[in-house]
Image (cartoon, rainbow, N blue to C red; front, top):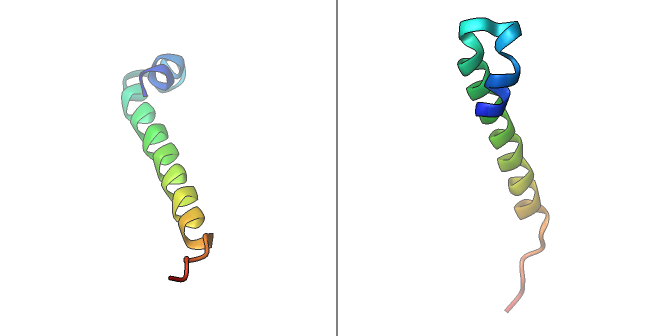
Length: 47
């Protein structure tokens, strides 16, 4: 979040921190979606 905010300060100005937060939440959402798809695609073990 801090790296994105620092690198986008010239473009977004005072809104760079919000942009960094948006990008980090988007990345976390993508990671959660990948984990969900992985969990749904794994076959259930039969006991």
